[in-house]
Structures are given as C-alpha cells and as structure tokens.
Length: 305
Image 1 (cartoon, rainbow, N blue to C red):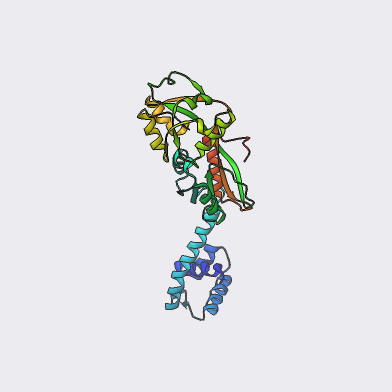
Image 2: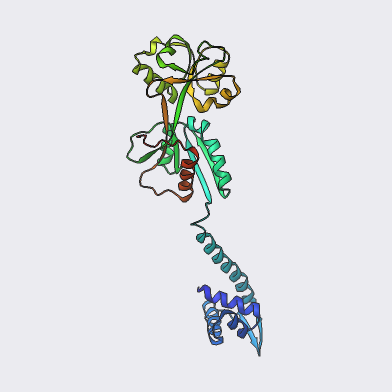
C-alpha cells in the first residue's frame, strides 16, 4: 500500500474537500481523485461519498482514517529516530566484568556515563573472567572488562586501564612512615593474602619470584577471599597486604590506612576490554569506550594483551 495515498486520504478527510486537499498537498485535484480511487480499489470498499462539494466518510473510510493516522505517525517517528542516529546515543548497554574492575572502576564510570547519556539503560554483570569471555562469545554481552587477556581466536582484547598495586598498613605500623617499600621486605612481615586465583595475588607472587622470594618464604598470616575482608584484617593490625590502590582510596584519604609505593618491576596489573572478533560494536558500546578513554585518562596505552 502506497503511504502517499493514505496521506492524501487523511488530508481529504481533514479538509472535507478534494480541492483544499489538493492545495494543501500541492498536487492537482485530478491527482487527488486518482489516489483516492486507487486506494478504494486496493481495499475493495468505497471510503468517501461526494455530494456536490460535500465530502463524507463511509464506515470503511472511518477505519482507514484511523489506521492512516497511525501509519503516518509511525513513518514520522521512524524518520525522526533514524535521523537521530548520528547525534543521540540511546539504547541498552549490557556490560560484563570480572570482580576487580566490577568493584573498583566500573560503578563510578557507568554512573558518569549514564549522567552524560540519560537515554542509555545500563546493566553491569559481574562474574569471573572466563564466564565473562564465554558470554561475550555467546553474544549475551557485547563487551566485557576483565583482569586478564587470554589467547582466543574468537575474542579481541584491548587495553582498558592500568591498576597500580600498593602495600597497605595501619598508621602505627613500623613501615607506615615510609613512602615506599621494596618487594623483598614484605617477606619479613605477617601477610594478609588474597585467595589463590585472584589477580592481585598472581601479580604479587610473580613479582616476589622475580625478586628471589619463594612462596614458602612468605609469612602468610591469613588468606581471605574478599578485598573488604583483607582490608578489615589490616585495619585490625593482623598484618599488611598488597592491594589495588583504587580499593583503598577512601581509607587512605581518611587516614585509617597508609599506602606504600612498591619498589620493583611488574607491580601493576592491567584491565582489558574484550569483545567478539569481527563483530561490529553498537553505537552505544562505541560511545562507552570513547567515554571511558576520556574519563580514565590512564588507559593502558602501549600495554600489550
């Protein structure tokens, strides 16, 4: 069905005149009559009755008029939304994340993104790195942010940001007055360790091995799963730990914990954005990545996955 015929029909009904409709549409009156006749033949019903100069709408015409307005309105809405594709960011952003970035970085970043783009509905799914990668592959998530880049031909990783690791101690600790501590010095201190498999622990153990400190040489006082539990143990004076600087910003600012810069190589970890290889990202995802680059500033330029 030609939408132009519906526009002409609606105009005739609104004006109750073929001649005024022709003037409104800037076409000839015979063209108006032809389009109305074509529409009636297409639908198999008389839609308008003409008595002299008077035009009245039949029962079938009332139905067509009602639908014509809706269809014309939908076309205008379609054109408006498509026209806004180049300017307005809207839609849904479903982002996956491993625990580190999901707790430390993304909540604030996504909050700022939502304020900048109020027409975007944001969902954050936090899981382990493997699950996030699998859900990206299965198209359940368009993008993920994880703490490790894994070789997989179906996935593409790009640097997202650096995460600096620091040693933390309570203010009364013997190391608290120093600005930095050598990684080897940690072996002499009671250590509160995050559980096996955590990204922070993996980076710490690699740095210790590089410094000639074996795992069994550590004085591990406790192993805990949650970063909050690790911080609580340090606050209680049970030992010191190595943790993301982002995780202790508030406590350091309040003075309840002291952060010490770690001397040595490789004492930082990297977060990566992961998406399915060969899949064109949606505009909302592209907008989020551009926003993240701008907001974080410390995106891991030059970090190799």
